[in-house]
Length: 128
Image (cartoon, rainbow, N blue to C red; front, top):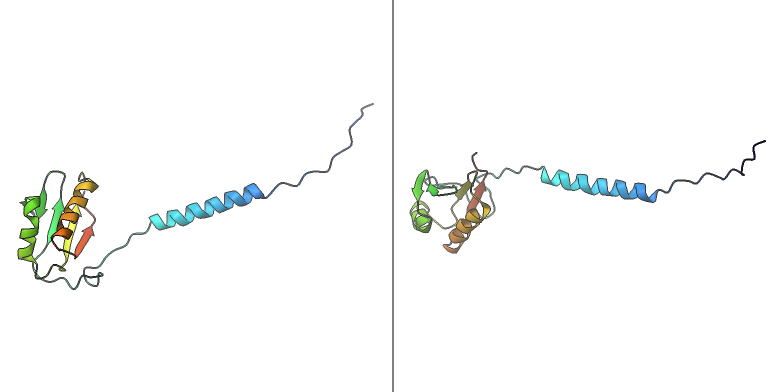
């Protein structure tokens, strides 16, 4: 008749690959949870920025122009125009980049304002 070989004992599956997969999933979900946080910054109580006082100081950055309180302003004249609107260099100044404005343009304006001595810069989410 038929001659079957001796049956072997079944091997136990290794748990090492399963532990690796679980660890990678854990790291992934921990990082994904950090990226999903939305943080709202109040205008008062921000580190180094006191209560908001004085006239509005909203700088809107577009791909072509810079607007100070809705008025087109030359980027080089921005520190002088802001000096007239602030009491101290630590007063709150809100920066908002509109869609289409690249990060380098925003960085250049922030750097220019920091060099002019303005330290109370607040970055707000831009309008679509």
